[in-house]
Length: 459
Image 1 (tube, rainbow, N blue to C red):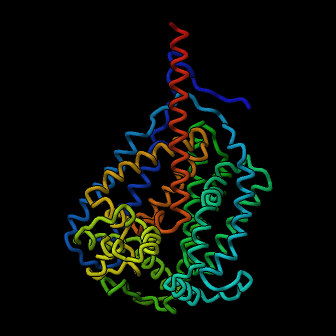
Image 2 (image 1 turned 135 degrees about the vertical axis):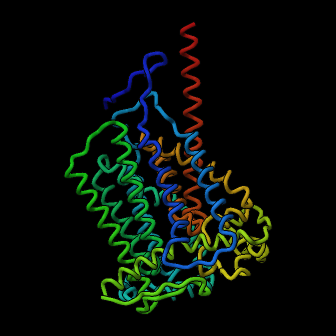
């Protein structure tokens, strides 16, 4: 396959290809806007929160945003020595997609049964999403050994299964027909699992991965100056809008079903309430949708505000993850680690972590302290920028996966530490992060070897 390479393939032959500023910093702009939006809604949204030390909350959040932005900026490559016009995808990508589809279907029945006690063919039971969700909560409280075993199995398969969701849009033109059908099969399994659980997490993850894939594909084309047909752009915008509307509609209908049609509601412990003043059914539905979405966005920062006033006890490096804490407690038969963490301390402040969110920051602070969270965000920003450049410059598979998984972390950041709450996402993140780092080290070593050889030839 022929490639188009910029001038300056070798040192001294010309200037490297400069990455457009908009392309280079688009993920950073999204992070800043998304992280600060809930803070804006916290003060100027439909809920009247009574905050203790709001100035400390604002200062901490801006410190985290600044640290992330600094790490992102320092490690975002302003230029690339060469850019392949159309780099080939990973050679085994079609086999990966097919294998992921097979694993998804094999895991679907045991996963549904372990989490809900139902079978996949009992599809009629999912019509009442409120009952489905209550049954899920009951099953989670019982702590079934089968559920733990299935959860571990899903974790081992996750690096391959989750690969399909963000990379489908990136590699779609190069995928074989069987791989394209396999990607649809994986998505179907996600949707069925979501229906049986009565949760929005799976739907939200699909939405995030969908837009991440679209963003990487768009960055890939923009970096090469490839123009997209206007009809294609319009069609993609319409599809994206439809996907968002479907998600918001299903999200709202599920919440209304859980509340048995009540549109006015209060957050946990009545810390803040939302009231529908009345009107047409359509307007009431729209107001309820806005109120519920706002509640999901900014309640985490209220929990963070409570956590900032609690005492700190170190949790030995596992307090950032509920599944790690549960795994450790099952071996030592003790809940001391959990009780030492900030999440348990939130209960004393009237904000129970079992029912409401408190953002990812208290989870991280249980191991790092709140002073250690900004340096961690600096590291995340650096990795995020390198993954973005690797994804759009070379369609690097590990770069695509690290960028997609960290996007999950960022989108859920105002709510909770999503990547660390279940074995599947935690293991997938660790595996792909290690692969990404090792590939970077190997590429640097290879470049040093080539440069050394060129210098010897010159001498």
